[in-house]
Length: 140
Image 1 (tube, helix red, strand yellow):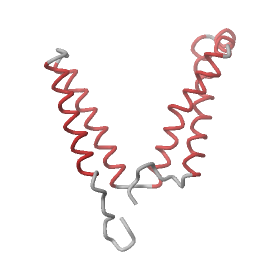
Image 2 (cartoon, rainbow, N blue to C red):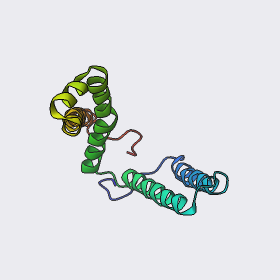
Image 3 (cartoon, one colour):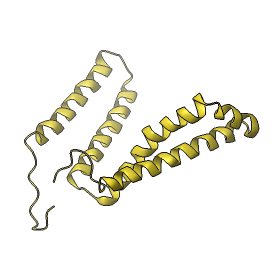
Image 4 (cartoon, rainbow, N blue to C red):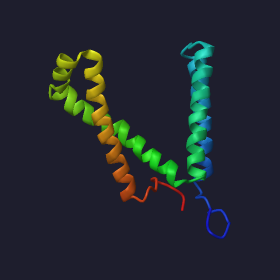
């Protein structure tokens, strides 16, 4: 919402985008049930979770918030950046074998996973701060 109280105009592609997301999701749900023969309870559970995530994504886009955007940047830092660091440092360098040998399989994995994910979170927050916590393709 702008300072004058009027809502910012949405681009022309806004409504077709969200309608196509919903229609394609409904088509895929029907295909899983009828073509792939996935059991109904699994299809309905997946459909409910998918529509919930679509609703959250829509809410994030229509009600921008600095706190929510910061949480999204931190989450983006944890998932691809943190897991990428985990793969590089733990799997490829042999540190995972060292931690597992000295700490055991459970604690070694936890210690080896927490550090890269935390670093990824800080990197995501740093990227968000540089972008002023503005999400890509955000409405003005």
